[in-house]
Amino acid sequence: MCIEDPFERTPRILLSSDNHQRVSPLRNALLRAGFTVDLASDYRHLELLWHELRHDVVLFEVSHAGSVELATQSAIRIKRQDAKQFVAYLADASLQAVGLIGDAIFSRDAQRLPQALRKVLAEQL
Image (tube, rainbow, N blue to C red):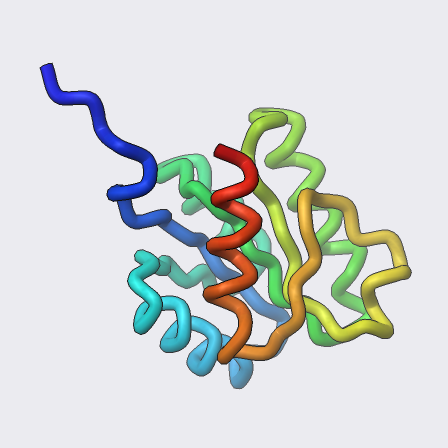
């Protein structure tokens, strides 16, 4: 019986955004860094995909203050079903204090995101 080493496994990320123009650079940076990334068309679609595949990381990209409530509601529904699920947000500093509920809030900087995500994931193991 082979036991999988968590450091050798590629983390699977589920990503959704309220601004589709921001998704491609983020996805590409994560793919280049070795992550597996699935995209959801919106936060509701994200929940449906999560139910099917149970990703290691669920990322909500939040560009607009008006989307905070939708993203937070989805995150809460996911956390209620699996409290251990890692849920994070990609948001500007101005949105970080408006009630985002989850495990982490990352900058949207595509160059820094993979490293920041790896650091947080390594600390959890």
